[in-house]
Length: 218
Image 1 (cartoon, rainbow, N blue to C red):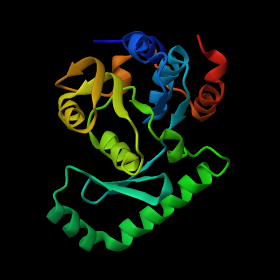
Image 2: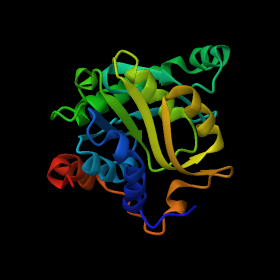
Image 3: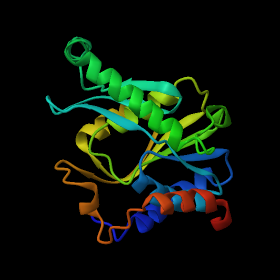
């Protein structure tokens, strides 16, 4: 399935969610910048807040392997596709490089969120959290988000995404309580490929959407 834009896809997802969740205590958290464009539509129809869970991927370039994801609060989520022995091997081989990357990533996230942009986990307590992406080719971002949410007592974790690959779908069935997906593809190309209009928001647009969500409530 192809979509006119992220905004249109977000409105379609909102139409699936609105009857059940319009008057419940919700929070929409985007997993990526494209997810902000999708999640904005969901947030304005459900009358809830929109935030982005920023993160950085730690990559072993010599091996072309994503080792871990660094999230706010110093949380490091290992790549779930690596076995424990594989993770230990790569850490032993690339310890200095990995620790430097993780330290730099944590510093960049602290700088980026220093103006109050960080999500307060306590604000999610006992709420239904909708994790939103504009497309998931793997389950790694979802795994990282669930790791970040572990200390938080949320009521339900819901995934909403227009397009998802089979590997990510398998992981989603394990990790979240409820799925709202418009299309599943066995041969995921690239996220932008599935949108006729590439309305990927830049950094300023992401911030504007987050800041004006409540003003746009319908």
